Length: 68
Image (cartoon, rainbow, N blue to C red; front, side, top):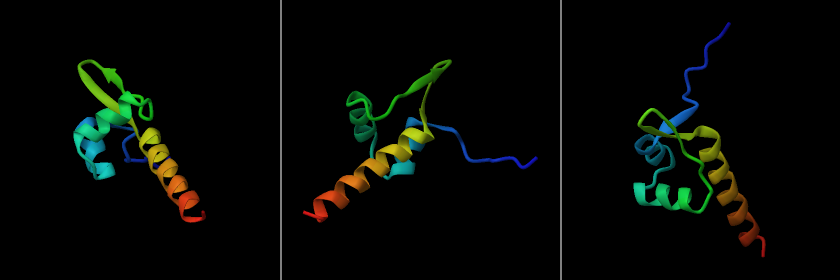
């Protein structure tokens, strides 16, 4: 059975690196409900699927604005 080594969730710092944004932007996305963090112990994690959804939403919005 093949093992997928890509993380399912990221720390806030890793999520920043993954999206290429700062911590303030990540926390703004959390506050807006676009990213749903969760905790394991004291560590806050952000699901990879939420990061992918943020990107897809932004790309779709930019595509629809370009089409106007």
